[in-house]
Length: 394
Image (cartoon, rainbow, N blue to C red; front, side, top):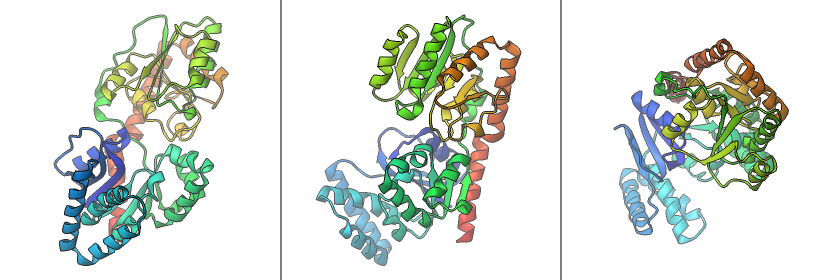
């Protein structure tokens, strides 16, 4: 069975790269389409088909793909050429479109797995050019709020979701929300993210025994991450004379609101902001913390929470999106209401006061949760089961 995975860029996110690696390890043939933005080192049964950015290389690539298709399938060649002719835009854009669609037509997979819902209307021609089954992944922002304020996107979902043979949802909450836009609940399968096996086997470096509590939050700078609520909570801690260091590791430009709050609350000595880190460095930084705080307003299921749980770092998360599907209060972590700095601060103070045995119960419960529900083996088995069910139907 051959699985085509389309995310637009190669390499892609941690979740998608983990999926590619796991599927390849299980023996499936994988084809990746998109723009190459960095180095990759995949297994031998992963085929990367990169659309060139350089104009000269793109022209040669398109001509070569046209010739391949002409000799492989004359009818499909005529159909593809006709669909490309209808696409509008500059000559350069037409070549880019051809550079995407032609290799897809030339490499007919058994399953075409679209990773981002927002891209579903970017190349609608694939639904006419491919004879395979289509799978679409449903993730946090693409379902929870983007179509709410973007009516054009919502209409696009309602138009194209009926063409999808099966949906993969990262959480039950996302699955339920997607039905608002025409996703058939009978076609939705919830498959949780996974944690790398080597993280489960690593010994937690454990933060030192400093009296200063080391808190960390990880994610991009975006309103949905709720960093301003976290800073409100840090202000409460400071007013109560709690000693702490709060580190935010985040990609993107630091919002003015965040800089203002740090200054307004006089938190410059307690709060440190670090630009995005490479994953291995990020893991080491996480291991040196006492507590992971996820103050988000909206999430699917945050991968950073799963990784912290696997590394023995206690987690405090807001009850947003699918996080309650992971965290059970005082069993494997702590969960607080959304947009409630007072509750965040109160739970941190409670965590500080808790004994060693309670913290050990939390971290042991967290590790067991990861092993039971978020292992790589389980995730890959569930994806293979999904793909096999579609191929057998066809």
